[in-house]
Length: 327
Image 1 (cartoon, rainbow, N blue to C red):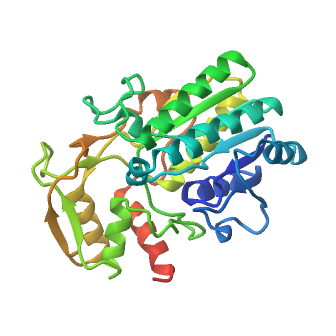
Image 2 (cartoon, rainbow, N blue to C red):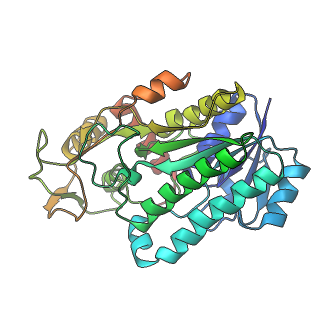
């Protein structure tokens, strides 16, 4: 059974993947530079290395010393607005970092690589739900850095047939571990669920709703929200898929259905038993009206089914986690 290195394992998504692997009886090692991650997010019984994925000598030493046989790669920068302001940072951290890590893995004989990609590679998708063969059209350096990384992994797999990868394109990730062991710690994260929960807890005065004239059920944007624990378990399923000898592939990771902004707010109000303070605001540039996944390939490829897809459960877990954190 593979011993797995999780890069970015001190971050939001990586820390949940660590829990999924450990719960499945897997041996796990975490590598994180702690630029945005939190050391306390990594369980004390997990081997931890602080360092840069682009430091080939350091990474090779970790891979060989720990006898790693698979890598789940979450490390990277992920703010779309920041990527527009600092594109070089994103191409360096995300694209060049992924290339360096992948080539180090190949040199160390690592055969299985799971990559944290993004549905943002589809850009302002004209087809919804979005299938994996929709031509990529990234509209930010962040999205472009993820798309470039996918292409590199495909090409490396052709040049080195023993090196196989699964590229998982996330839709909107939300929620927290149902047992309260992990959750969103980054104060700069700005997803709708996090902002709504902060408003519910009084840490924000009002929740802004950007645009109410879209061609959707209620005029607000519609998105595909996936519980972080289901997303983490899909990574374990992807590892099982590769270990079974299956070929490299790219998969959407979502539920294949969407909720509008007002539906998310209404669901949170139901959980809270009271109204949220909201304010209508102008549309944000680049926000497509509807954006959710086609999961046909995902369901046909991986032995995986969601266990936490009820929106109210997603919101309850996020609220429980945020309420337990200091303001």
